[in-house]
Image 1 (cartoon, rainbow, N blue to C red):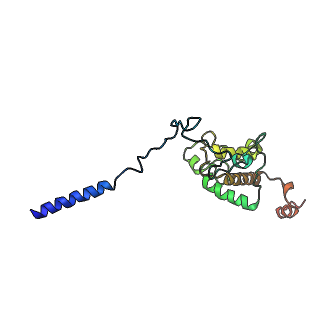
Image 2: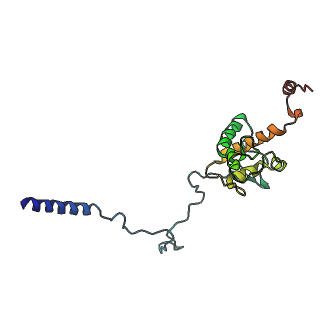
Image 3: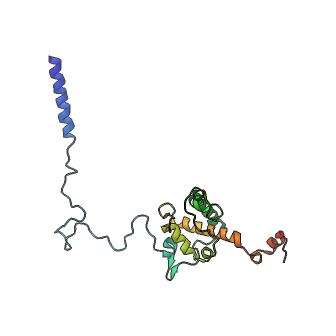
Length: 193
């Protein structure tokens, strides 16, 4: 009998101690919720406006050409990162990850997903796509187009530009004029002129 009384008292003591630890003082303190009215301020809003010039963490993207692919007159014509070997190699890596399932490694639009029934995208070698400004390709990567999903969340802006540089390299690989080659390259092709 004594053991049962002590056991019940011990359980009761643990319950009281446990409930004391569950106090909600920190959670139930007076505070204003977002969009709630607050008479302390002239505009009656509890949520205060941001200080002028504040930039959300990770969003200092004032350069519209770099971060959105647009200039004063629409899509930017030339890739702001340029076409260095480093940029093109980075673009090739990103292209192989994100673009080849639909566009394949050559850019002809016959990737593995297309072979399995997904709608075929246009070939990057189509004259219309060879003529579009670089900013247009950047925006399509970011925002998607037709059945192509947006890749804004997966591909950061500089990688989008690198992919654009690589797409331009793919296009050049199919349509380079012999006159554009150096004399040594023309000689290697046997066209020495």
